Length: 261
Image (cartoon, rainbow, N blue to C red):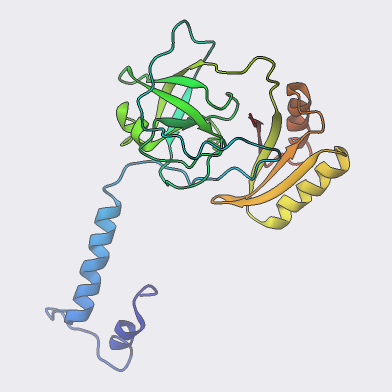
């Protein structure tokens, strides 16, 4: 009875005799039981497997804002072969309104996705391998920061390939890279989630001592506290070395290689 409102809990306290066999519960108590059963049954009807959205931290450098761009327009299939292909688990994320990594505001009705390492603005074909349904999306955000997942689709894109109800599905990702000539990848390492801010600060201090000159921030997300290090020389090899070092003194955390641009 711990979850029962105070007034109803008092009505069945020791000041009243327990109900005998055949007696009906009082209307207030009966209503509370009926409501509890209804909530329990309704919660069991949903099979979607979502994970809490862990927003990326503020950018550590200037970033163009795409807030005025509409992401609801269907994306045509680029010509030629994809330059990058990977297979793995995909999920989708629902809450609209947060600021995405490219500066735009995430819209669940848009044709967008989050990926940890593909350049922002990359056009991607995502194919649900269970039914061979495909959808074209634009990479506008970073994630998913859940071990074993390679891409997060917008709500609309997930519905297009029947991933929405399942929540998670195995997909093939084919990327048509869109980068400007001379663009250098800007790599960083993000790791977490820590249950307490103290744990995140311990890692932040260790990174600052070992990698002097790098920028390190800690921030709170929906799943806990995160730490991100932006190396002084943000090339791929340096970021990979940092990611491997984190696993030695902090084997209980999962580091992710993330591209900022």
